[in-house]
Image: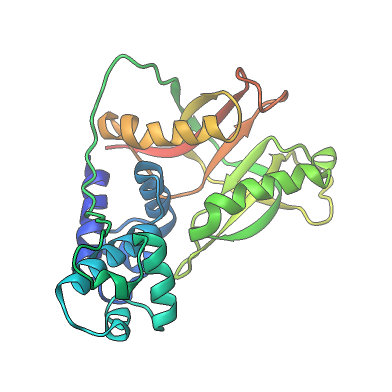
Length: 279
């Protein structure tokens, strides 16, 4: 449960510094989690990004403050992190359904967005297929791209679509997706699409060799159409498996393995490989 406690400490940190400039890198560093895995875990468990949470909390508090004070809208906008009254008014109206000026009127309906407290409810009766494997380093022939952590949940699926739309899979099958660790002092990471590389094979233009280090791996079976099936398994890893497993994840690269066939079929098989160590 340590990683759950870490997430709640991260939320505590956000709440303590809500009216200050906040970055995901700063929050993740405060609780000793990599920025990438902090944002991934947060989004999987809450259904929103860290940025959305911070924005909703600020707008909720701004509504309460406007209703109870005589302060000018421009001053409230600056107080809650907006550079101009116009950007504040636009965000405020979208969130509350009324303008900041209207929020000052008695009887105006405002929306409340309370702080999060992450709790894991452990339930039995469901099967989660996994296996533990120790494996030597793996070389992968991949076309790679650098992604921003904050937008990766949208950009990565688009990258896969592009890979197949442009026919790159005819040259190098998209059998693996490799997610390298986040770059030091950065919010960027490298992700590659390709297949296992065998010594002596030709390396096409725009491709490179990625080396996945030797690790003990927790390998999770995903069944169903992509990317929904894999997203659901990632969520179950964090909400069901990690809290009660004898293992904890290592902050290193993880990867996905894809099989041949229609990846939109209800019986389609894929796998998540996550590096782990015994607690």
